[in-house]
Amino acid sequence: MSNNRRRRQSLPAEPITLNIERLSHEGRGVARNDGKIAFVDGALPGETVTAVYTSRRSQFDELNLKEVIVAAPNRINPPCAVAGICGGCLLQHLHSDGQLAHKQQVLIDQLKHTAHITQFEVLPAMASVSQSYRRKARLAVRYVHKKGEVLVGFREKANTFITNMNYCTTLVEPVGKLIAPLRKLLFSLEGCRDIPQIEVAVGETASVETGKLDSVLRVTLTLRHLQPLSETDTDRLKVFSDEHQIEWYLQSGGPDTIVRLWPQSGDEQLHYYLPGELGDIKMSFYPGDFTQVNAEINRRMILQAISLLDLQPDDRVLDLFCGLGNFSLPMAKRCASVTGVEGSQDMVERAAINASNNQLSNTAFYAADLFTEFDKAGWAVPEYSKILLDPPRSGAIEIVSRIRDLLPEVIVYVSCNPATLARDAAELEKQGYKMTHAGVMDMFPHTGHVESMARFKRIR
Image (cartoon, rainbow, N blue to C red; front, side, top):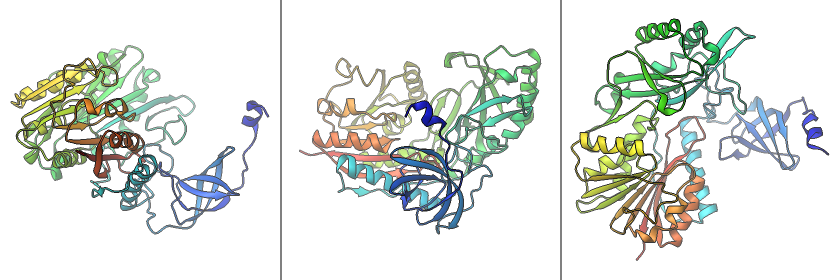
C-alpha cells in the first residue's frame, strides 16, 4: 500500500475503552489495545478511560482522552482552563507529588536499562511551587484572519496551532496575566501580520529570600517582527509598556539585532541574585541570554551541586558548559579556582564580567567547542580535582569518553535529558568512575521535562 493511500485512510470515529497500565516517559498513559501498545494523552495509570484515535501505526496507536470512567486517586482538576489543549503543559491533571514520583522513576529506569546502574543513593526529588514559576518562554504569535483576532501563547499539543488562551498559570504572574492584553494590543498594530513571536525574560530588581521573589520581578518582552514597525505601532507599544510596567525590546533578525525600545533609559541588562550561602552574588544577563526558567529550583540546584562536590579550599574546579557562570561563581567562593568553558564567546565574556563585578579573582573563562576542541585546548589539562558538567540535551559523550585526560576525583553531572545522562554514565563507569548519587529536580512542573543531577567518584 502506498504512503499516500495510508494517509487517506480514515481513523475509527467511535471511542474505545482502555485500561491504563503506566505512564510513558513523556507522560502519556500506556494501555494494550488488541495486543498493540496504545498511548493515551491525558490518561493516568490505574484508570479506565474512553479515548479517540489520533493516529494508527504498525506498532502502536495514539489516542486522546475522551472520558475518565474510573479515575486514579492522584488525578486532579487542572488549574488551567486550556490544560487539555496547550502543549506548554502535559501533566496538570496529575498531582504534583505524582509528577515528581514519575520523573524520579524515569531517571531510575533510564539508568537501569541503558547504563545497568542500580546501586546508588537516590537524592530526594527537588520541587518548588508549581504555579507562576516560569521566567523564560517563547510565546508564539499569529494573526488569524478568519477569526479577526491575534493569538498569543504556546502551541497546541502535537500540532503547530497556537492555543486560544487568555492567561497562563505557569508563567510568573505579571507575565501570565498579560496574554489577553497582548492579544488586544497586537491586533491593534498595523504590522500584526508580521509578528511571529514574543520572547519573555524576567529578572529581579533586588536580592531577596526565595519566598519573596515574586515581589522583585522585572519583566522584559522581546517582540520579533519580520517587517519594520510603523511609528504608530511603536507608540502603542510604549503606551502598553507604561500601563503594564514591562520593558520592550525589538528583534528584526538574529539574536544580534535585539535592541531596546522602551523605556529609553534604564539598565540594559537584567539581573538575578544568589544570596546567603550561595555567596551573595549578582548575576547580570541580557534578555536573549540563556538562564534557568525556575529561580527557586536554580538556587537549590546550585547548593546541591556544591554539596555533592564537597568543595575544599584547595580544590581546582572545571565547569564545562558554564554559561553566564551560574555554577562557576558560587563555587569560586568556596575553592582555590574555577575554570569555566562555554561554546559562546558572548556568554564567556558575560561570565568573566560577572566574576569581576562580584570581586572574584580566582576564575578564568574560555570559549571553545567542547565537542571538537578538547585536544587543543590549553585548559584541558589534568590539574582539576573536580568537574561540574551541565551539557545540552545531547549530553557530553565526547567529553566523558576522554575523562581520563583530566582525571578529576569527583564529577557532578547536571542533565536535562535522562537518556543521555544514562548513556554518559555508562561511559563514565567504563572510564573508572562510580555513580554514588542521582536524583531529579522539577525545573519544569507540569511538563515531561526531567532535570536531574548525578555524582561520580573516581575508583582508584
